[in-house]
Structures are given as C-alpha cells and as structure tokens.
Length: 298
Length: 91
Image (cartoon, rainbow over all chains, first blue to last red; front, top):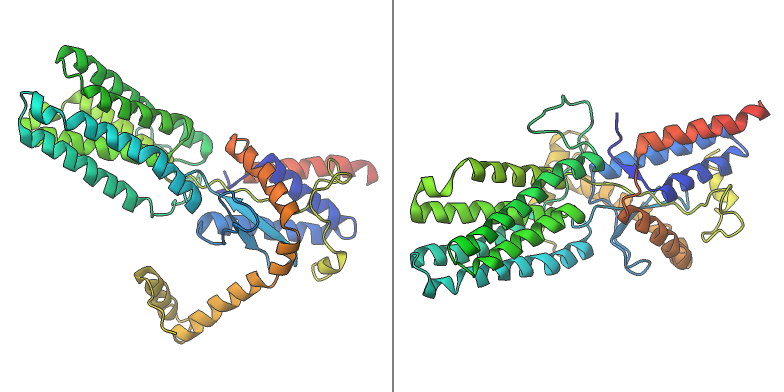
C-alpha cells in the first residue's frame, strides 16, 4: 500500500539520521520517534493546510509544522506546484491565465468584424473565456484533496490517482488532449482560412505543455473549462450536432482525466534538521539537537 | 476585538460541539489556541537557526521539484532493511 505522502532523498536521509542519533542511546525510543514523525506526515497529508508559511526563513512555498512532543523537532513540508502554496499559486496564475486568456480573446474578438459567423458566437466566446477565468480562479481556492490510498479497485476508464507516478501517467492524457485540440485548430486555420484561430491553437498548446511538463492543475483545469465553454457556445450558435461528436467527446474525456490526475496530488516533503551520520556529520549545515531536549523522549 | 468567522470556520466549530467532545465554542477555541501556542513555543530556536534551516529546505525543495520523490512507506521500509544489515554484525 502506498503512503499518502512522499519523501525526498534528503528527507529520507534526515529520517535515518534522527533514528541513528537517538538509537545510540535507546533503539526503542528511536523507533517511537520515527513512528511519531510518520504519523505526523500522514496527518499533514490529510490536512494540507496545516502549518504556516515562514517567508522570514525561506522564500520557498513550504509550510512549517512543529512536533511539540520533541522539542526542536521541526518539520517542513511542501505541496505540488499550484496546489496549496500561496506564493506558487500566484506565480502560476500570472504565468498561465493571462497568456491563454488573451490568446482566446485575441482569437475571438477580431472575428466579430471579419468572419461570416454570427456576432452572438464571438461575443459568447469572449464572455465564455472571461467566465472560465473566473471559475478557474475561484476553484483554485479549493485545497488538494489528498492522494487516495491504493486499496481501491483498479478502474480502467476512470483510474484512481494513487501517487505522483499515476498522476503523471494519466495526466498525460490531459496534455495530449491539449496538443490534439491545438493541432486540429491549426488545420482549421488553413481549411477555413480563419487565421485568428492561431491564438486558440497557441492557448491549448500552452495549456497542454504546462499540464505535461509542470503537472499544473491550473493548466489542466483551464483547458477543461475553456474547452467545455467553447463547445457550449458553439452548440448554442450552430446546434448540438456541430458542437458534439465522437472526437469532441474523446478530447473532453482526455481533459477530464488530466484534471482528475492533477488535482489530488499532495506530495509531502519532510525536512527535519538533522543530517545523516553517514554523509553529513563533518559538514552538517543544520545544528545537532541538544541532547537535553531529547531526554523526554527516552 | 470582534472577529468575523468564515463559514467554513463556523462549520468546524459547530461540528466539534455537536460531536460532544467540547461543551461550547469557547472550549473549541481554547484547544485551537493551545495548539498554536505549542507551535509558537519554539519560534526562538527557528529564528536563530533560520539560515541553516533555509539551506536545508532549499536542497530538499530542489529534489522535490526534480521529482526525486519516494513513497513514504517504501522509504521507511528501505531504511529499516539498511539498518538491519548495518546492525547485524553487532548482534
């Protein structure tokens, strides 16, 4: 069974170093401390908004949590980009949303005046983009739900996202849906001579890239909402047959899987302050805990 | 001082009181403040060591960003096996 959290190699070595440090005097106490740290990790994974950001200590998007039972036993954890760290979230919003939003708007607005399609379609497209941006911004306030445990039955078409590996694997489908939409839009640029559609293509291409490389849930959600709204507006203008077909359903399913895969992941980094006795005692960047503070543990 | 609670904060307090573990909303807040106080007790140490802590976090953060992550249970299992090997000759 997979744990609902993950360690970096650094955190793994820290955990080991803590154990060895205490085990020099008392192995049972070392086991107890380790169990307590792991229990805290599970608790943090279940409640990802616990802890505080400390910009006076590090500018990185991490949260701190103190283990009161072990004086000096501070832990620090981070969440996936755009998941919970407020600083990271803002950075992602400014990088992605205006870029794709402006692409959609630039693509739709000029067509109001030069294409043969109805004005309602293009006005609707612009409004849909703005509405989509609002929905995405509001939804991002929802914290990650935490990766599911592996005791659920495997479902082929709607898989459980259990860890970062499954998130990466199934999230690729969302990225491919973005690439496919961008490619199909490029074809329409030439077939319909609708040169402004290049903005739509760029927008979906960028969203696909961010979903793929950055595992961004902002991008996955933006792509899903944008695609649904775009098809809804098209359906209102030209009827259901023009808006929905098998290809559209397949792409929509890809976006939905991408969104599902990117949303629940909360990898947790635990970074206590001890170094490995095997690797770092000579050049330990962090202080050794005061032995007096560990007496209570033993 | 008057503080307006957010709806989700109010829901948590109501839930805690309904569970029977707390007699009234004041007791719920007492418990929350106690947890915050525990967290604040070691602030002095954190501030003194902030440079060393920041360097330590930076290294781990970079590893996480590169996707160098190990499942928590698998990491612990690996550590336990490694310790067992190392301790074996000592009995």
